[in-house]
Image (tube, rainbow, N blue to C red; front, side, top):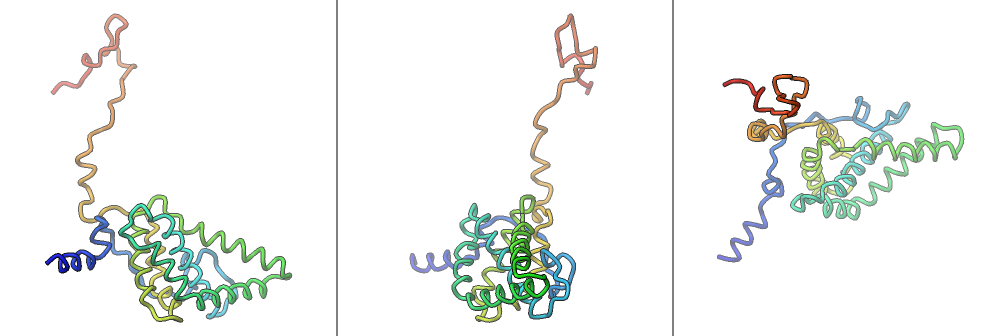
Length: 216
């Protein structure tokens, strides 16, 4: 019985232990040409270059999640990311090489191309800031990273095409969907500010808020 219970506990999905029900943020497959999908538009990019950019954007998102989502250990963003780096290393390296060639091709000098590539990398990471939507972002990144872990090598780009819009949607500020108003209904006002400009609240230069409370 003990072994059975342990197996059941280990089989529970991380989302069930996260205690957060997010909105439906799924979206259609993308190609990389849609506005807002990539951190920066890549004018004149070929389809292989756009696919490489989508791979790099999703890799950056999962990297950010591995760092930002450690407050919830049941989310496997960190171990999943480490596994992804190992299992999909060939495709990740190939995508970076393709992106490098794009920036070298679209800039006049190798130095300018390298600078543009470095700036692009910074923009990609910055685009996944989830200060106001951490729970939604972490939940989505956990689900996507789990899919990537079980995706055959060479198909990381396909997952990026399928799920990158969802990752972008997760950065929008959302709330708990199961009990959207419960928190606000139970929390009383933090403080009642004094009304110093109401003469009725004063008596002989002494502030007495009871004197100007609204009648019930």
